[in-house]
Image (cartoon, rainbow, N blue to C red):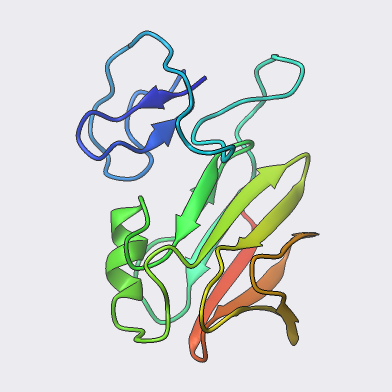
Length: 157
């Protein structure tokens, strides 16, 4: 179950006070059914227990934006129309990055990277992820969207 931001629609963990995507204050709301087609938009742990915030961050090379925390069970869309405004705006300069290029989800210390049928691909290190494919990887890891967009996923202090 997630707390959905009224301003941008991003899913947030239920205990969040501010939206992870736009920073707007969140109000407590009744849980909503997921309309995400199986992609988790909020904070959920399989056994239903609360988990501590994960210590993983997404950094977009050369963007000048602060590393963005990736939280357990929250799916983040990487792309020119992704739900995290700062990352989406930074990705707009890459012509070969799709609107909804890839999803990242942190689960039990592993990051699941899922290509969203992108035209120009997702590379994990030097390996090209099959179109529509997904893979669990350990952090730290560097991925590339298209030719030039380099994203680093690493532990944060």
